[in-house]
Length: 140
Image 1 (cartoon, rainbow, N blue to C red):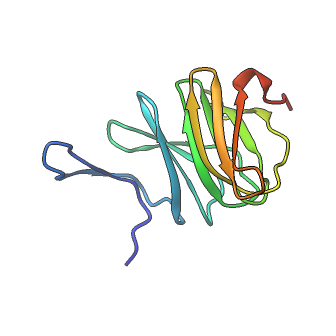
Image 2 (cartoon, rainbow, N blue to C red):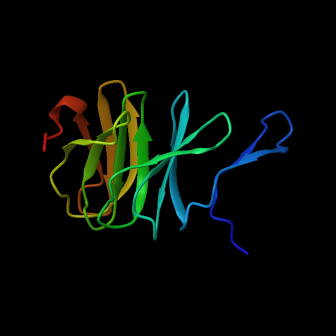
């Protein structure tokens, strides 16, 4: 039986600590900030938010058009990338609103990294690595 849940293990000895509710599909991407863990994947095309403390479900974010392959976050924003939409969406964590989106790229977004005021991503198109300032993402 395949479990489609986030599981937490203690770093001290890797003993089991907690488990989130069933995600509903394959989980492809995780990111974490100081209070929450976010998951995205296949079948359920909407990223989900859980509390780190007990892995209880908090909310679901807007649906991505295809599979979610990559997530990055800070305390304010969740960045979502994947297949089909072929863009990076910037979503406000507090209310799950999409506040900005990059133009569509030639390939699916495979990996996202957020650092300071910049977001870096890779796609499977002809240009491999992209970087933009968060303020340069287009407002919808």
